[in-house]
Image: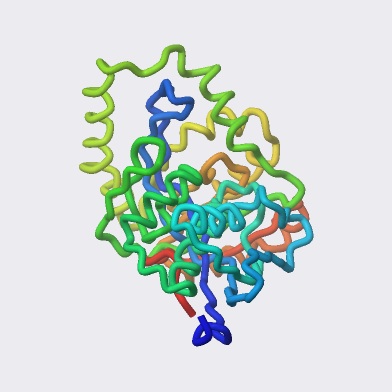
Length: 313
């Protein structure tokens, strides 16, 4: 421990967008059966980790809107490691927050995974990726994706992962009203009430496997065209767009952008995004429309797609 006393670890913790989000049905464990393509983007928080000698987990942040108590996923992740490994190591953690909260970009999930990865190194725990994923799955459905990140197929409730071999060069333009956030749990509940009449049963297994196979075979093919309009499926958009004017307006703004290949809501929203053939094209549209976005009440960003997820700096 003495050797680690002065060690500082800094981790880049990126957001994600959904290039496909399909709700197959309700499961009897309270979750939903999903078929998704998740992709990391270069809009990132940064976490700094240092050993403390008090055996405590201390979290600070530059974001005043974030709880720093035991309900924060960073604290939960650290405490899970301590409990599962029966250790009493401490850490000072500082979060520099850039990913908006409650945005459908999974910033909290990314931070949780970054904490598992960061403390695994800081505390010399030597946990392999499978163990980290297993721990992540107990914290939240999106969190296992971030252990490796990049672009992946995500099945089950999100914890069944299949790495995809792809390196898209699309540019991404994001829009989010800073005064609007959406509850993921409430969105799934609304979707269930409208579209999921019955729970999935054992006889649904073949249907689930067919949905997964279809996404494996055809999911990325939908994104492999040049200079054509594409379609991204997000089932949750069906309920959020109707209930949330900021989402409806954001999608309308994005649909009118020149050279836009496709547009969609990410996750449970309210962040919406458009894809362009490259970052330069996205930047051009961003600059041409920045004042319009601001006047309509939106924060906006341009990002590229990442081959990897969480990284050490």
